[in-house]
Structures are given as structure tokens and as C-alpha cells.
Image (cartoon, rainbow, N blue to C red; front, side):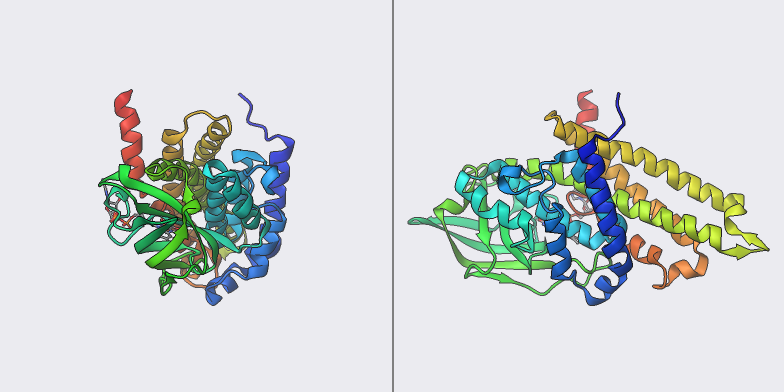
Length: 379
Ligand SMILES: Cc1cc2nc3c(=O)[nH]c(=O)nc-3n(C[C@H](O)[C@H](O)[C@H](O)COP(=O)(O)OP(=O)(O)OC[C@H]3O[C@@H](n4cnc5c(N)ncnc54)[C@H](O)[C@@H]3O)c2cc1C
């Protein structure tokens, strides 16, 4: 067993870490206040290869693999969780198109996503009445001559107000998941309306919007993969996406532990640094150990993906563990900061709010347990 990073992985991690320390960490609070990640920040990330880490170089990607992607995601989330989710969805959309698209779709959209011509990509699966259960989806796509006409509502779409291209799921056949297909819809297509952004608890610099499709007409070439194959595409994308969100949670947790460690050595009470009190040391120790355990689950899932082996179960375990760990670690970090941790003056408050959503999106913790239980029952 080899736990060492190879040269590419170490380089990607260092690139992401340096960018995160230089640009994101100092400015994350400002992005949150402005409720926006500046375009030039996303552009620079694309230039550094962070918008297509696991995308073939022939399409403009970094082709650095799934482990490098998880490492980069972790480092970006350590600086700014909102920027990390924007990066996560854009990478996921690039990978989906690279994996399932026709040559024309791949060559049209992937270089724009990974190269920064598009600020972001969006993944439009969820609906007001279909979150954990995509089989309840009501958005439809109907053939009209050489076109598809899409009608329906999408909910919770990350970067929906700045995406160059959306992967949109819609019902083209009968009920349940077998009737779902995926389409590529360009931002600004007539009939695609972007709603008011959600006023969220955390990751506030990342936009989350509803979408309304009203007779939105796309060419027949917009179909991604085969008709009726949408659910399979979504599930494969979400397996990879869960590794990314696991890594995002890990980065948030690592950032919170860094903050707690620094504060504990600086803050004096009873004439000494609070780090000298065993109660504080134990909080740091528990966070350190739990994050290490979560880190190996995330890296194993990424490595399995990169090795082209089955990894659904491992991705679910990684995401479940990392997201719930991040929440506990952030909670302890707030505790180490005492009253100051409860103010906007210190980053731990934001990190705690940001971490909460990692237990919800890309499948809630309950849905991860459902996936894990299926495997556990199989033996
Ligand atoms: C900030 C944010 C960004 C998002 N970005 C995107 C995006 O870019 N694209 C996208 O498509 N979606 C996105 N989502 C949607 C997200 O994936 C869904 O919110 C999530 O899948 C849960 O769906 P729901 O909110 O409808 O909750 P529901 O499915 O209604 O779940 C409510 C509760 O019931 C539980 N539950 C449901 N079914 C079961 C079951 N079978 N067994 C046990 N418990 C169950 C859930 O775990 C949860 O606790 C985003 C959400 C948020 C909050």
C-alpha cells in the first residue's frame, strides 16, 4: 500500500494551496459579504487548470486524475467553501460532457468550461418536488421536428446565474427514472429563465437559483448520451461529485482546525495559552484524528475512481463521514474560540455555516446511508 502522492498530485495540491492562501483565505469574508465570487478569481482558477483537473488534456483539461482533483478541492475549500462548490460543479459538468458527450459536444463545451471562457457550468437535476427522489421529476422534453422543447422548474441550481452551459435533466419517456434524459442547454437560451437567488445559511458567495423552462427549444444535438439514459448519467456524475463534496468538507474542517490550533496557542487565560488546558487539547486531538480518518476515506474513493474500479459505496462513505466530521470539527473550533468564535470577526463562524450544506447536497446523509446500507446488506 502506497500513501505517497506522485509528482503530479503533489504539484496540483501545491498550486491549489498557494492560490487558496494567496487569494481565497484572505478574501473569503469579502466574497461572502458581496455574495459573489469575482469573475477574475474564477478566471485565474481556470488558468491554473483547476476547472478541469480530471479532464483530458485534448479538451484543455489538466488530466491530473481524480486524486489530484480531490486534493485541489480540499485546498480550495480550506480557503473558501463557496468558491470550492463553484469549482466542484464546473469540474463535474466538464467531466460529464467529456465522458458522455458526442465529439461535437465535447469540443464545443469542455474547452470553454475548463479554459474560463465560461465562468461556470451548472448541473440542473433537482426540482421543487424532486430532490432525493429524481424519479419524481416533472420537467419534460418533447420532440418538435429537429428540436427538443423543455418545460418545467428546477430548484437549487448552483451557479445558475453565471453558467455558460447547463446539464439539464428532463422526462422524455414514461414514469420513474427510466424515462429521464439529459440535455446540454446554453446559458441565455430563450425560454430559460433564472429566478431569484436563495438567501442561504452558508456558502453565500456561491449563487443558488431556481430555473424556469418555458418552451425552451434546443436542437436535437443537445441530447447528452442516449434518450432514456439520463438517470445513469446523473448517478455516475453524483458518485464522482460525492468524492468532490467529501473533499470540500475535509477542506472546510482542516481550515477550522488550523484556525482553532492558531487561536489556542495565542489566547491566554489563567495566565497561560488555552492550548495548555487538556480540555482544549482533547478537542484539537479529536478533530485531528477524525479529519485524518475522513481524509483517507475521501482519498481512497478518489483513487478507486482513478483506477476505474467501482467506487459508489466508497464515495458515499467518504461523503457521509467527511461532511459529518467537518460539522463536528467546526463546532469544536467555535468552542475553542469561546465568545469570539460566535462573531463574524473569526472565520470559524463562517466555516461552521458553510460546512452544514455538505450533509445535504449531492445526496443527503440519509441518502448516503441508504446507498451504504444496500452494500452492507449484500455483504
Ligand atoms: C446550497 C445548495 C446547492 C445545491 N446545488 C444543486 C445543484 O447545483 N444542482 C442540483 O441538481 N441540486 C442542487 N442542490 C439540491 C440538493 O442536491 C438537494 O437539496 C438534496 O438532494 C435534497 O433534496 P431536497 O432538498 O428536496 O430534500 P428532500 O429530498 O425533500 O429530503 C428532506 C429530508 O428527507 C430525507 N429523505 C428523503 N428521502 C429519504 C429516504 N428515502 N430515506 C431517508 N430519508 C429520506 C432527506 O435525507 C432529508 O433529511 C443544492 C442544494 C443546496 C442546499
